Every structure is written in structure tokens, then in C-alpha cells.
Image (cartoon, rainbow, N blue to C red; front, top):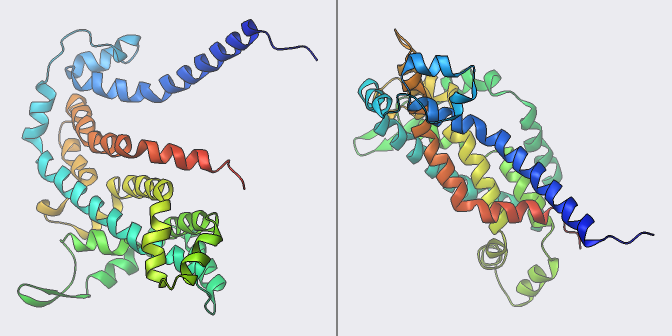
Length: 292
């Protein structure tokens, strides 16, 4: 068998990096186009789309589109609403779904496998088929607040948070990850007299950084980009998230520069959240190929 020379190894490494850079550029191009378009007036933006100038900061560059975008819609309020709703939902989802995954993996109880199968089967049910029944349900649910008992959750933060605290995909991620943890740790903790909650909190969760990051990123993307549900349950402006706020830019005359400026601003929280968790997310993807 012919040996691999240093030259061949260097060539293959260069080709590999070239391919990776090309793939990265393909994914980065839409973001570059969005940012560059947000800095150009409408006529120049449309004219540049037919050439590489669309990806370059050339021509009449300014921040006027950002200023006009703030005049057209309360962007700060929409971003605050989305970050609040998404952040609380992600935290509650991680807590509830991790405990559910722990119960499915480590606790022996009757009907466990059947119940898990039913939960996973909900993944094939389109949200559009349950949107109206869910709307009718939340419109009549009671709520205890500072002013006493009220009925109906519409036009509130809770209607955008509580129905999405638990979901089948997140539970499945935790179940699969917990199955790969060493059983010896659980058995040793039980021998030492630890309760199931102590095992969950002090043994399992400290080892679950990768799956927590993966589940958090996926849930964050789903919640932050929600459109249909907030559209039908929120009519008051003070509770609207960023995706519903996009409608403000498609009324009367459409200014694509302002649309791109708005999209650039609402994309920043997503990028910041991913960058904060990217190490754990990459570790989770890498660990899927490790066996034994």
C-alpha cells in the first residue's frame, strides 16, 4: 500500500478547507445580502440585486433605513416581547422536558413505553390542525392575577408561553441523551441513599450540558420565529412579537430597505444566543458519533 506523503496530506487538507469555506460562504451570503441591503436606498437595492454589488457596501450607504424602521414600528417593544416570551419558554421547557426524559429513562412505571410513543406520535400532527381547538381552549381558561380570577388568556404573555412549555422533540432529545449516560452512576447514587430528584439534579443534569444547549437552541428558534399562534391570540400591540411586527412593513408602500433593516435587527438576538451556546452545541453534535 502506498504511503501518504506530506504533500498529499497537505493537498487533501487544503481541499477540505476550501470545501468548508465554500459551504460557509453559501450560508453566510443571505446574511451579508440582508445587512448590505439594509444600508442602501430602495432604488439602489433593487438595481444591485442583479450583480455582486448586492453583497458589497458600495453606492449610497447610510443608516436611514434603520431610522425609518423605528418610525414605522415599535421595534424595541417587539424585540423585548419576543426575547421575554422565548427566554421564559426555553427555561421552563428545559426544566419540564428534562424531568420528563429522566422519568422515561430511569423510572420504572406502568405504561411508560406506551406513553412515550403517544408523545412522539404528536410530532406528525400539524399545528394548523389543532390551532383553532387550542384557541377556543385558552380563550376560556381561568387565571388568578393581582385583580382576582379572570377568564381567557388572550392578549397576554402567558398564552404565548404556557402552551409551548413541553414538546415531543425536546423530550425525545433528553430521552436519547440520558440513555447514553453510564448506569453505574445512577446505581452508585442509589446505593448512597440519594433520592431520584437528587440524582436528577446533582448527577444527571451536570452531565447534560450538550443536550441542554441543543434543546435550548432548537426551542429558541421555534419560539422566536413563531408567527401563526401569536397572530391569532394577540391583538394588542404591547404583546406582539417580532414576527407579527413584520406586518407593519408590508402595509401601504413596501420599502424593502426598511424590511431588511428590521430583519437585521431581529436576527441579532438569534445570533447572540447561538454564539453563547455554540461550544456545547458542537460538543453535542460531535458526541453523537462516539460509542461505548
